[in-house]
Structures are given as structure tokens and as C-alpha cells.
Image 1 (cartoon, rainbow, N blue to C red):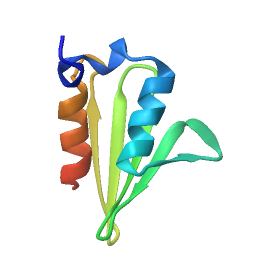
Image 2 (image 1 turned 90 degrees about the vertical axis):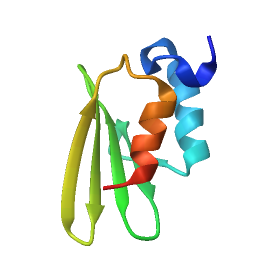
Image 3 (image 1 turned 120 degrees about the vertical axis):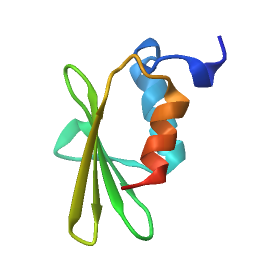
Image 4 (image 1 turned 90 degrees about the horizontal axis):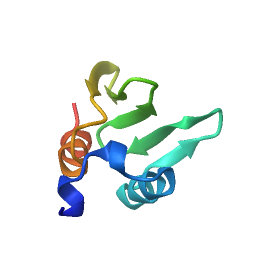
Length: 85
């Protein structure tokens, strides 16, 4: 299976961390399951929650939140993150 088509629940934690680092995200010092990605016009907080992955974007005070099943493939998650709010 093409790695980009593989559901994120099939990746190791280390692989997911490496992927997020390549996107430019940094781990939150207060929560190991939370990552922060800052882009010029917005910020995203990526949370690995028990049942799903949530992304909260902050764009000039406007908050947008989406949740994704861990069965979604990595490319779709990456596209959603990088598309922004």
C-alpha cells in the first residue's frame, strides 16, 4: 500500500512524530499528544485524542475545529491540516 494512502492508525508513534516535524509542527511541552503548527496566517493545534484526531485552527482569533477518524489516510489528514481553516 502506498504510504500516503495508509490510515494513520497503521503508523508507529515515531513515524507520526517524524511526519509532523517535517510539516513544521513542534510538540507541546505540556501535553505529549498535542502538536502546534504555526503558519504565516494561522496556527493549528493537532491533538491525538483517544477516539480521533482533532485539529483546531486559530486564524486571527477565529477558531475552527475538525475531527478525523484514525482510519483516514495520512495524505488526507495532511491536506486538511495544511489547507487551514
